[in-house]
Amino acid sequence: MTTLTTTADHHLIPAEPTAQLRNLTAEALGLLDRHVSSNTLRAYASDLEHVAAFTSSLDEQGQTDLAALYAITLDPAQIVNYLAAHQGSLKASTLARRVAALSKLHANVAARTTAPNVQPTRDPAVRQALAGLRRHQVAKLDEERQTKPAAQLIEKAGALTLADLRRILDSTSPTRPREARDRALIALGFSLGLRRSELVAINVEDVEITPQGLLVSIAHSKTDQGGYGARLTAEANPEHPDRCPVTIYQAHLMQLRRAHLDSGPLFRQISREGRILTHRLGAQAVGRILITRARAAGLEPSTVSTLSAHSLRRGGATALADAGASVAELMTWGRWATPSIALGYVEASRPFQGRRGLSL
Image (tube, rainbow, N blue to C red):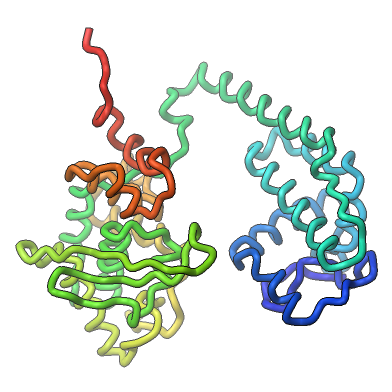
């Protein structure tokens, strides 16, 4: 029996394989394992656990038995039955992701063993069921539109406005460790357009102070799985030191140095007593910190309810567009591959700007 983990020596196949293992060295297995990120592996683990519970593919400890799950889901009917059973409780996108996790399980077994490369998730019945789920969801949305405003059906994080960012910064003190950290976290996330995983991965050694502002090196990101890295800039604002990314960063760095932590993770956990700990701040904490600071700053509850960690990236993009940035400049700032993605970050917050319309 195998428990899903995300350790380096885990290959996402049954400990008791259903076919003879290929003659692969440890180095070769390591290469196969590194084709997906640890976050993706964790997502696969969660998705497969849910399918395993439905198909009774759990071991005595209630954990996923990969061998049993693999054998049961060789039959496309089992996958379709799973989809049908959850069409009313889970989104079509969630179920499609779980089918993708099953597909990865079957592909991994084929890659590492001499088992035939069978892909039951590509069976016509499974594909038709997924299409049916999408149609079912559209029909459900049509029903909801009869009772809910359309705006409530669009699920996107709200953009943190520049005015609200300033209110948050004005309501916090750079002389207290927790507030200094939170100020730096929010200011850098906004000005650099960082994803939450990128934000908490920054080390002190990754930040360089220059006369023009901050230079921040990002080792890798969601869209840079090859690890080529990037150097991002946050411009100094000497006219308003309390809003200047350099000043805000330096205040937080001073708190770290007082705790003799002037290297390693830039954003760390802090105890209830206000002591800076050695542990790196988790990505999940970014959204909670933003919401906590927004409430403390007196932002409207209707605004706070739309905020998440992604609001920093959306807010920075919107502020940049308001300042007159071109689409190319937006794409460079956000490291987006296409104009449509870059504009999508701005349009949700500024629906009437940058569009030609008719006045009757």
